[in-house]
Image (cartoon, rainbow, N blue to C red; front, side, top):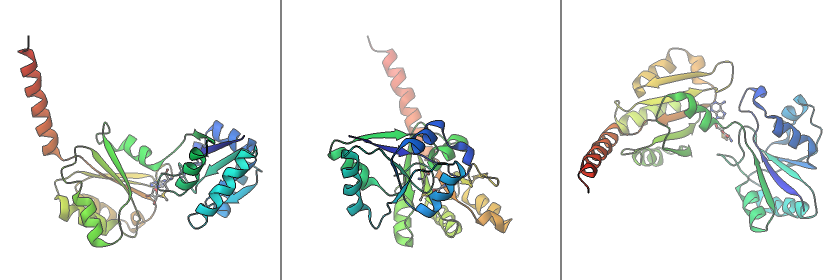
Length: 247
Ligand code: SAM
């Protein structure tokens, strides 16, 4: 039988494609893509001539089994999404799940993802983080989600649309307070890549300084709650002291 390769593609800068991704895309029998027109541009840029197969949210359930059957018949298939790592706030969970359930080999070909790229340069703690994908659009659901991070001992990471970013920052400010440190990462790996770090108020002001800043793809990161951190550091110190007295 064949193999299902999960291939990460660039999130902006095309030079971020990996050698292994290119080799895989060239060698497989079929590339399952979220949007074949969009991915067609990427593939033609790299001279990849492999046939494409559309697999999006609306047809995933029916098409997953069809693709898995092709793999069982011996075909190798690569899965790509519009950008970054497939399945990370992207479709195709069903395909990978069905493939594994039916004993088909699934091989990841790692590469860019906006969540890891943003965290790596934000200057927030990364020993623990929680990735929450896109924030809910409805206001009450958004408040409930943000409230859940009030006592967080980890950095919280969200994807957000530029249309909602000002409202979302105002909601974080109102829900968690303006002391909470936030980082906004924009247009990662692209020409206008930018980071803004500080209070929600300072980031709102930074965005409003230049309307161009209100465009492009964005990642929002919320720092851990400092008091919770402080408390655990205190508890840690106490534990260390007590341990010295142990026989
Ligand atoms: N699978 C992708 C990944 O691995 O990051 C994410 C796909 S999700 C549909 C698209 C969202 O990811 C965007 O709305 C934005 O929040 C974030 N994103 C993708 N590329 C980005 C970039 N170059 N800079 C900042 N955020 C990005």
